[in-house]
Every structure is written in structure tokens, then in C-alpha cells.
Image 1 (cartoon, rainbow, N blue to C red):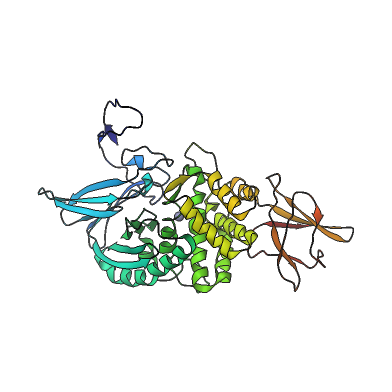
Image 2 (image 1 turned 180 degrees about the vertical axis):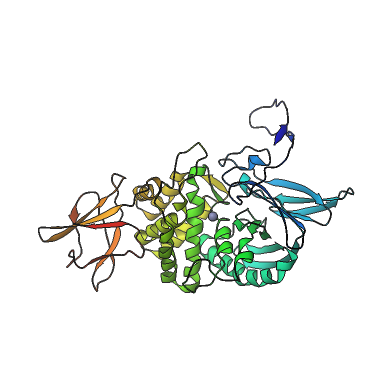
Length: 443
Ligand SMILES: [Zn+2]
């Protein structure tokens, strides 16, 4: 893309002034949507054009000029897109105006009233049919707008009716109000499966890949729409609370993946949510650190999803107080509402609110690929244990029980110490492996 711009700014620090940037060019075409981006050009099943953007990771500057860094967000945005008559453009925020340009084109003006990160800005062009609903939520009336291709409308109506409001009820319970009431909630059909475009979530693959309400890759029998759950969770974690650096993409993905289990818990009970997370472990590769280098637009291991979610569930298990856990999740959304954040801000928040320094635990799981190993040793007829870890001072409390007993927390460190559970021996000690994702060694 070629930028055609030159301007001179003479103003005092802190003052605001307008400037114009003119640019033109041919957009980069991508086939790897949604993450590695550009513009996707397709034809829908009725022969009409279907165009969408996607640029997470690659950065939005591949298709429009901007300060392409996650640490800064505009506070609002007007997005105007002109398309050939008969087509519609759907972008983020609310549709302000539709203008017939009298030259065969129609312009759609969308306005986003809240801060938005660059990769969330979206253009969706197609022969869409619009239908809508209203959700009465924690912050009042939330508009639900759906833009689907005509031949999918019947299916979509049923699917959204079954999934969207139940998702919003569960997430508002766990995380507090949906963060973008002003801009509304939207699902927009795309040719690629999904992307969390703020207040205009891209929704595609599910309509194509399977019958409604069938969970992809899960045999538990629990029915829900993965795309609606995962991508909508990003409105809280990713879009409202956004990482300042791509290296902290776990703040988006670990929480969104964890949110799926909280939805299941809300609907089917805590155990089902835990089992769901436990099943996700088969997808963890422990190939490299989830948090790579800062400042170089580097993205960490794909383990940020399942391993990140597992980590959050372990933190909850350690805190061992479900009401407090919910307060923490609600609180994090109030504290960092519409902000960009760092690793330390998030970890310190959990430490402060839980009353325990959780830094060594977050560090071990996010900054190293290796799992910590809990080593049990039978020493002079007494059972002892210690953590073997990359992080020095790793001290994760862990739930254990003796056969037939109740789980209780023990507090191992890197030093070998006696296991303080009456009657515990190397033969009868059980670790809560449903919730703890660790290595276990017996010596
Ligand atoms: Zn995601």
C-alpha cells in the first residue's frame, strides 16, 4: 500500500489539532484469515461478493495507515466505507448514516464510541440481511444486531436465539457488564470461521462446518456454540482489557478460553467446567514459552489458549474461595475497563486481590515451557515433597488428599519439606490432577 501524505504540525504539547492522511493502493490479499492478514475476497453461494478484513498479529497497517502498536488506542472512530449499490458494509460500532453517492456507490458510516485497538477495526462487505434482538442486561438494554447472508438467516436466527443471551447472562455474572453497550453487540457473517472484531464479531465457520449447537471436537454431550462463546469473551478480555504488547496475547486468549469453561460451569455446574478444561490439555504442546520477547511484535506459543486457561483454573483452585474468585474477575474488568495493560498489572492485580504473591506461578506457566514437577520423597518413613521448577522460589500451593479423605492445600517450596497431611504416605497420597496441570515424580 502506498501512503500519500505529507504534513507539518506546529502546535504546543497537549493541544489537539486535525491532520489528514491520504493513501491509496491495492490491499494485501490473504488466504490465512483471520489471524495473518489482509483482505479476503470471496463470492457467496448466490454469486455475490463477500469481502472481509483480518489482521490480528500482522497489524492493521497492512490495510490502513495508523499508529500500529497495541499500547495505544483511539478513543473513538468514524469508519466510512463506500461499496457498489446493492451491497452493504458492516463495521464496528453503530451505523450512523447510509448515503447514496449517486455514482453507483453507497457509503456506510459507522461510529465506534469506545476505545478500539487497530486490529479490531473491520470492514465486512456483502449482500447481508439484517435482523436484531434486544438483551436486558446489567447496564440496561443491549442491542443485538445480526448481519447474515440471506440463505443462512433461518439457521442463524435459531442458533443465535439459543446461544447469545445465555452467553451474555453467564459472562455478565462472571465478568460484569458487557463492556460496549454504547456500541452494541453484533455478529457478522464472514467466509472465515471467527474473529473477535470489537462489537462486530466475525462469525463464519460454524454455519458451514456443522449443525447448530454441536461442540467441535468434544464428546461430552454438552451443547454450545464455540465461536459465540470464545469470540464474545474477547469483548471483556482483549477488547476492553487489551494487552500493550503482542507478547502478552495470553491476556486475550487465556481468559477467553477460560471463559468457555465458566459458561459451562454456569449452565451445567462447576465439575463440568473443570472437566472441560481438563480435556483441553490434550491440545497443549509445551513447545515454547507463552510469553516471548517484548517490544518486537512477537507472539508466544499457541499454549496461551489451553495452558493459559488451565493456569487460571489453578489460580482459582489455590484461592479456594469461589465468591472471591468471581469478585476478582468482576473487579479486573472494572479496574482495567477500556485500558491497555501489561503482564505485571494483571499478575499484580491477582496477587493483591488474593492476598498471595502469585508471580512465581504465573511466571512458571507463562515464561517457561516446562511444567513444574512435584517430587514426593519417602524419607525416614515420612513423606516429603518439593517443587522442581525453572522459577526459583516457586511455591504453588497444591490440593492433595489421602485415599478416602478430603482435598486440602499443602504449601510445597523448592526445599524438601514434610507433607503435613495426617496418614499421608507415598502409596496413598493423591494430587488433584483434575485441576492441577503439573508433573509428578515419586522417589
Ligand atoms: Zn481468541
